[in-house]
Amino acid sequence: MTKMDALFHALANATRRTILDLVRESPGGNVAQLCSHFPMSRIGVMKHLKILVDADLILSIKEGRERQLYFNVIPIQTAYDRWTTQYSGLWAGRLTQLKQAIESNRPSALPPEMEERGPRPHPQTEEES
Amino acid sequence: MTQPKKEMFKIHIRGTLDSVWQELTRTDGLQRAMFNSRLHTDGVQPGGQLRMRSPNGKYTAVTGQYIEVEEKVKLSHTFRFAAYDDPECTVIYELQEVDDGVELTLTVDNLPEGTKTAKQMRQGGTFIVNNLKAIIETGKPTFGARMLFVLFKLMAPFSPKKSLSVNWPI
Picture 1 (cartoon, rainbow over the protein chains, first blue to last red):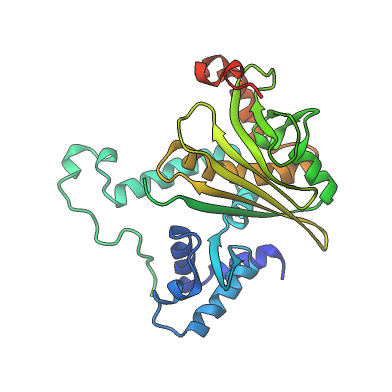
Picture 2 (cartoon, rainbow over the protein chains, first blue to last red):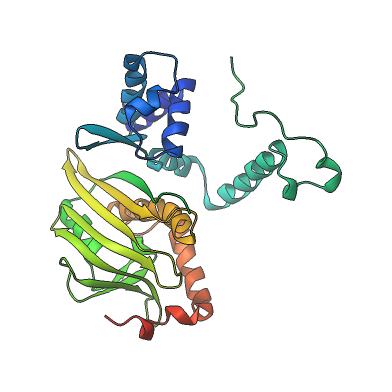
């Protein structure tokens, strides 16, 4: 399996994407803290974690008796660089920011008449079953 | 401001330990992976002072002091942007030889959360490891980096007085 295969295999799972979110939000957290977010067994979480580590998306650093987890953005940046040019990146970035601003109802990005609507309950929730 | 944070960037480079180490410590030319800065130092050794200056030496972007220097294995130094009053953070490069190249890990520790320094270092980390890879594998920095260097050159006269090199002697 190439590095790129490992990356997309790792990302092709909602639990693993959630693990990435959690590790990115709390760099240096340990496995026990991570497990507390999931109803599944520690072994189940470890299995997902191994796939993320194999793809270099998570760096698991030995610190004394435990391991600290860090998010590594480089594999995603590598995939991004492959299909994005300097110019398409700029405009695509503007569009995704616009989408985020509108969907999260960030007041500054909206005309006043739209600000009365409350924020959507879970703008970050993935739309999948 | 909350707890200082640590960020890590790991990249695989098809090159030798020699070439990566040389690029990280070179003083004989511009460090293109370090935003086209010129490294000024009184010695790449623990306690040695370092300044990352503009190509003509007039402005200083970064000041620091080497902490650990283990040739071709580990290089760490303190890091502070000359133009900001933020606390300093720590930058650590670790090199490891693998099958077909070198694995380079960049760690930025003690990031002062919520500061300009933290924001710039998060973006800077990706830039640095990506461009080290590009320089060693292709001989030149990425297209984006080359565009940025042109911009830097145009913007240099607007640098704050504080970052003038006369304020940051070694």
